[in-house]
Length: 166
Ligand SMILES: [Fe+2]
Image (cartoon, rainbow, N blue to C red):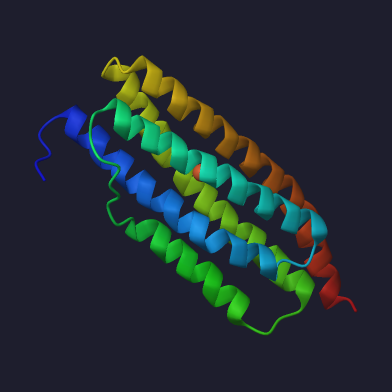
């Protein structure tokens, strides 16, 4: 794969994002199953639905660009997911597990936010206005999910701290 232009960089980012979203789509249902707090479970479950939409949007972008939807192995997401899976494999107190889960899933969100921010900026510079709008819509949803997780983490971290005082 030649990477000699901003357009090449843009397409490369889209392939990484496509793989990242598909990895998330596969991993999130299992993460949701391991959450105990009902609100946290609900946020994870609704994020699975949202992730499906994000995957479909990327497929539409590939179509607009006239190329097949093809992922490029996103090692970063693979590592972050491995970390979450390793976490819920431990036998742990539910409050501790939930506090860990929310922090680890937020890392995935932060990766996606950074990657979508770059991709959206490349689309803007390349004059791909329709694609820029699609990427912006996803970026906004990722940011909203991150804020929701941040609010929940505040509560879950306090609950986790209470475990020490039992
Ligand atoms: Fe997403």
